[in-house]
Length: 225
Image 1: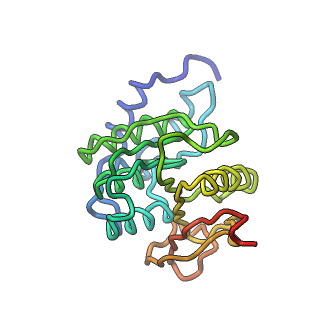
Image 2: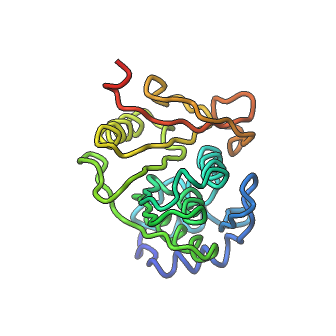
Image 3: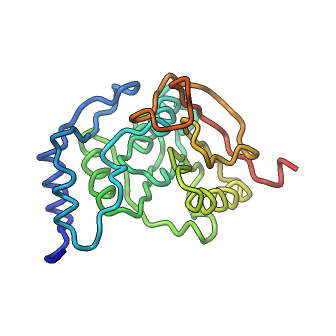
């Protein structure tokens, strides 16, 4: 593959043109740019010689949707707090936090396509969400009261790194909430189930057989001993 990688502006232009804005099932208060069969994501991938990761940002995944629903239904969870949406993807969780009254919302994702999408989605919902970089192999983030995590336990290696980061956060008195449809690498020993929501996974790909997703509070490993 040859040629230049798409610029940030060309990525935003593609998203605006090919991923229509629509309400998210289960959280119709939030509208996102969402992929359709005719959106041409493969064409976008072919244009990028630097590589094109899985387009998590183009879909509303079950864990994130369940967590967004929980935040909107329980605004006291985020009200007046500094919130980090970790592995933000489309930004649905961070947008929910902003709508529910968070003092400040930051979103972290390593995929530049996700950064472009979540910026457009924040504008579409008339909220402020700031994209930031986070090193999950480092210490807990400064200036954060609550970390929200939707659908980050799909891969064993990623899950191990994320769990270690969340453990450092929780040990430092940063609250952590997780939304997930029952993926294989959830750190069950450190989770306390808060609520269930009738949110099926995209394509029915998760381990949840009943089409439901859950929201959990994450607790530091020491507190479970």
